Length: 333
Ligand code: UT7
Image (tube, rainbow, N blue to C red; front, side, top):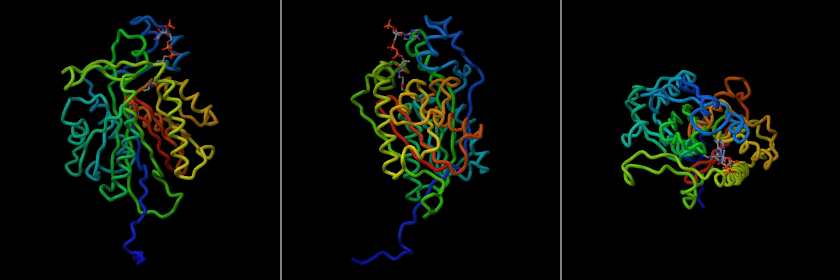
């Protein structure tokens, strides 16, 4: 068989995180204050979830406002301007409007008049879906620099009279800038692999009971918490194992785990299942609660800022959410 000349062989691309940023709304809603709104207690919330407080967007503060602030911080950290981006992907389930995409609203505010911007909707797994899509697009040369944002205002879709859900979520945004580089070195920084999954049979366990086509309303979040919990632990552990195995990496050799921040008990159960040291699992669930697609970049930024995650470290991200959707990504920071 004729061999392809080396000059024509596809060059391996590694997409490196060159900047990260996040934004949390000013208003903090603590458990004690929540206990005045619904029949719950600080003790119950902390014991069952690990959550102490959550941030709530101000009246009129939209998902695009949060995402824009996180994007500016990530671009500043990367030291590039928005005009140097080819692509913006926003992971959200709480868009400003039914359309246009909130990504295009942020694109306009950033003054980026080139490339493309679009939203991905995979609920709490949105950031992992975003990494998967961007990494694939960049590997085939469709973009050289991309901005991935996870931004949510879940406070707007909560039923504030339902104690089984309203205590669990918060608002926030996180963003990363990725840059493609030709690289043949296995240890080069960048996304090594990402793996996404979904199973629509479980839709009714976690959903919003409204939408433009079905009800012409926005709706409220509904969840069978206990069932979601069990599926989350099983599938997160599975996808992390699969993602590591595909890269030929031993789970024990990973330096840091940045999970979706839904419940401290889920984090603990997955760590136990995979025999991971609890100290290597980044947790911001106490301060941020569940910020859906924003939770992974928010947690990752916190651990980079406080000096735990350093350049060269092997990091695994993971998430699980409505759909069900789930996924994991392995990267060298
Ligand atoms: O981000 C997407 C993924 N989402 C998740 O991963 C969330 C997964 N689920 C969970 O985190 C947990 O299932 C919850 C935190 C939602 C609930 O914890 P649980 O240990 O599964 O409790 P439960 O649903 O079995 O409820 C236990 C009891 C119930 O009372 P009874 O029936 O035993 O009398 C609930 O009514 O706790 C009651 N309860 C509450 N009590 C005080 C539920 N919510 C509250 C509350 N305060 N806020």
